[in-house]
Image: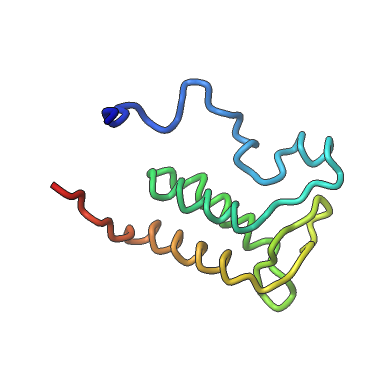
Length: 115
């Protein structure tokens, strides 16, 4: 069994800040047909929140919030034209957003390690 890593999840070669947004400025211009998948975006927000990176988690939640449908639902994906590009509502995305909000507010319970 390998020992647990002792370094942070962020490496010295971290991606540029716009890489953490589903449509980094360069990506949106270079790939006009690109889409952002909201479940993966919400899962990244949850992982960032759990790792203590509340600023980036909040930025992703703001992205998701700004692309809800007119009825307030979260779509499965958003296209590079900033419009919902698939089915909505999507329970998977919605549940991940709720978990992320809970993590940011009070933290989620963690199962203790077995001894």
